Length: 261
Image (cartoon, rainbow, N blue to C red):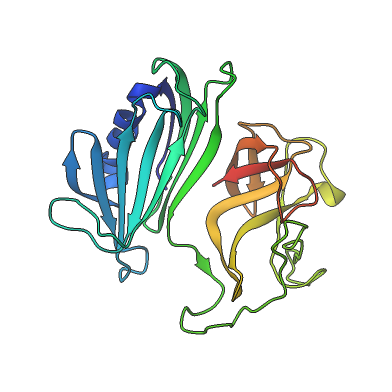
């Protein structure tokens, strides 16, 4: 899968990402279908060849109260001029939490497959209003058919108190309840048998419980890893993108490492 990374000024971030997405390595996975001066629309049929995916990336480099940002749009309908319908999902990829000098630097990691696009953006760590965040656009690993309503009606928690702390070891022998964990080799302070448990990022709603998990993203306990580390899981390389101090419902710790294949 193509992977790109770099460090650019905030007012150059859109241009850098658009250039990567139009490169020969990425364009065979997501086809550019429309481009304006500060917007790029892409389409993919997914690995299945039957999905209908559209992603639009807009520059939002103006100085505003919400800081400098990109806008990522996901939809299954798009017009010939690259516009998307009202039935879409827009998300701001914020780099700084307040209006800043557009010459401030930011780091990015971009990973592309036919099923999804993952973007991690980190503001200049020397700025006191920098933001680190991950944007995910595309399909996820479904736990059951979308036609099977309530098929995953598991008693999950929606109060943030470890509701997803239900894991399954690499041998598929359950030691909590439902969800499958992954054995991960980390560089330092290994756990029992030199392995850690990597946890999928699970998507759920209040009516049907767990629906599926994000592709190629893991979360694991932060002890023993730092941003930029390379870890292995079943022979697959993952890069530790960032350490987050936000609360997590799938690990008992409030600090987790986010890893990208």
